[in-house]
Image (cartoon, rainbow, N blue to C red; front, side, top):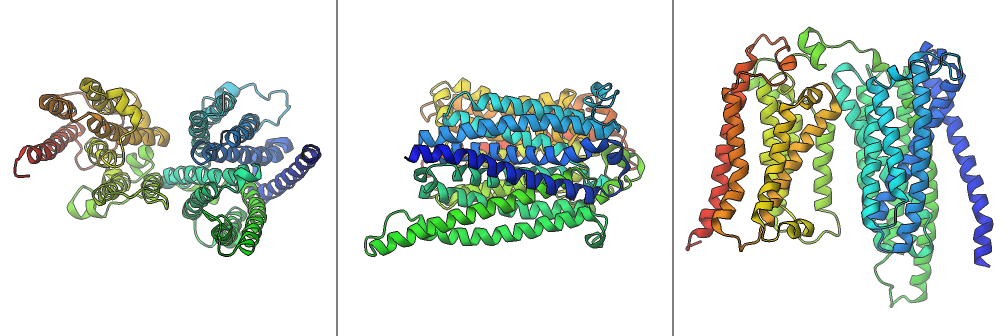
Length: 604
């Protein structure tokens, strides 16, 4: 009987979902028309592209959210194999829909960019030129990654598969963020970073909630799963609120556009929806506390069971309402992504540095100017907050106070390096750029790598082979050096995606070095441990000497062409970078040797 009922309900569910999507797609088209106004480029692209772009964007965003959120739930929260397999089937279908929608978005974006209506005789004639542009590259990359995500999602139902799909789905969001409209010229990096945070947060929140409703009662009402997801949802809500306000602010010319710009008004409508979703979240957390207890209340008996059952039913109804509001918010977001923001016409900063970097030339480095130089980076701030929230999550094991202090210090250094003076001057000074990445590796990376447990797979890989640990400890610094001496450095200076990749390479390299040193068992000989710790320092020593003595300028077409009226000799500035690296290596060597002396001191 239950099987026949389920079979009859599936077509009805498909019809309901289709009707909901049709409604959201219609709303996105109307909102895009209102936000676009009389934009001539959108009109020249024809009605198919003009109306199809927001529909494709809505479908792509919803399917990508389902892919990311479902993979996160399956990879980190679900423990039942059958539930994980069910979720990954949904994730695979969602990834396939994402691929198709991304393909349609590529076609519509080409039509808008070239002013060629879909189906016109010349449509597609210069598609090769379009996909070679920055926008075309990211659209094509998102399409390829979505196709790869679909392939991986159908390979199995293991935790490893689910986590791999989650990483690939995150890359789809990264590509989508890079295709977003630029904000003002000085805030393009802020605009793309906030969009990335926004897409990741909405994907985990919306997709996770949706797949939970598709599970049978056993998995859907699992207290540990629901509480774990509730904590994730709270983090996502905070991330959405902060990144959304920040992103809208940099896409506005002035606050008065709240009353005059349809684009900004759509953003305000999204903010109102987010407040409503926050209220629903408060109600849901109350129902979770009442209906998803860790154990039944034996003293209350049937009354407690009835109350818990009622709380779970209320939670599900609130979840459906939450999904509806989130779908509406995604439709509004798709309309905004298909329309130009008001700040699109911002004038670039003047001077050679403004043309090259997108930012005005900072003042000459002095104590006052350096201490007040600040260029907030949403990605670095969000990463630091995410590390802290994961470390102090509600059900985390008890942490030693010294490790918590090191993690907090590492997160603070991460924010300072990515948003502070070195982030400002790193655009025009090779010394600041090198010092920023060296400190990300040596200070922030090693601090973060010194906390928590060493992964068992890393310990198994190292075992008693200290030389393997030494190679791993050298891997991060070697890759960073390779990034600097290769053309990738020029890409990192010119593009935000490569810029973030180089920073994360430095940070991850420091973490890997610290973990490799910690993975070595205590049975290794003292000289082996000393060589393991000293090898990265010797490599840094050689790098500093090379920067100090070489006559070849790193990224000469960039650092030699910033138009600086102060510190105009770029090669002399590179020599300052060498001195800075040597100082950091010397300080690190002293710090590394102090614990060894203490352990060897019989009085310690």
